[in-house]
Image (cartoon, rainbow, N blue to C red; front, side, top):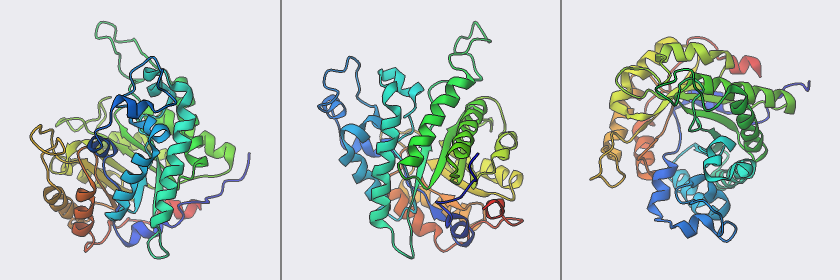
Length: 348
C-alpha cells in the first residue's frame, strides 16, 4: 500500500478555524434559468440517443460545458470559497436511468476539470478557491424497500454502490478536486458505501483529500429518511474522520436550526457545515422557493452569531444573489470553535 499524503485542500482546516467559509448554491436552480431544450442536453453527440435527456443536468458537463462554467463563475463572483462539481447524479446507478451509465467516469472527470478551471481563474494568494467533488445519494436506497408489500426487497446492494462511488471518487480526484463532498445523505448505508469506496480509492492512489459529509433531515421528525436522528447519523459516519459534517437540502434555514444545534452538541471536535434550501417550495416565487436572499442570509447570520457553523452556502432554490447576501451576513462573525485540536491536522 502506498503511503498516504495530503496533497490538496491542506489550507482548509486553517481557514475554517479563522473564518466562516462560503459554499456555492444550487446547480439545478441555475440550470433552469438557461431554459435549455432537449436539443441542448443532447448536443450533437447524443442527438440520436433513445432516451429523453432533458433535465439530466450532469450531462451538460459534456454537451454544454459553457453553461456549467458560467454557473460556477457566477457563484465565485458572488464570493464562494468552495464550488461543487456538477456531479450530484453522475454515478453509474443514477445515469443508468438515462442509459448513460457507461459515461459516469467521463462526466465526473469533465465536471471536475470545469470547476477546477473556474476556481483557478478566481483564486488569489489571499483568497484561494476550492473545488468540492460532489457525490450525491443516488436515486436508490440500500436500507428501504421500494415495494411496500415486500419489506425485504431492495433495488441496489452495497457492492453496486461501492463500485459506483469508487469510480466517481477516482474521476473527481483525477479531474482536480481539492476535497470530496458526500452530500444529501438520506440513507446511512448508502453513505457508508460511499465512505468505504472513497477510502479504498485513497489507499490505492496514495492521495487523501479532505471529506465533508452532509446528511439531510427530511421532515419535522428530525430524522433522515432511513430513520436515524442527527446524532445517530453522526455516530454512524464519524469513523471517516471528515473535515466537516453538516446538513443540507430538504429544509429552509429556519426549520434546520434545531438540527444544526443538535449536531453541534454531538460533534464538538469537527467543523460544521450548513447549506439549506431557500425555504419551502413556492410556485409563485422566482426560484420556486419562498425565502429571498435577504431572509436566507438573515437566518444564517443568526447561525453564525450563535457560533454554530464553519461552512455555509445554499441548496435548492438558492442563487448567486443568495450566496452574495450570505457572505455579507456571516463575514463579521467568527467561525465555530472546536473543543479540541482538530484531528485532520494530526492526521496530516
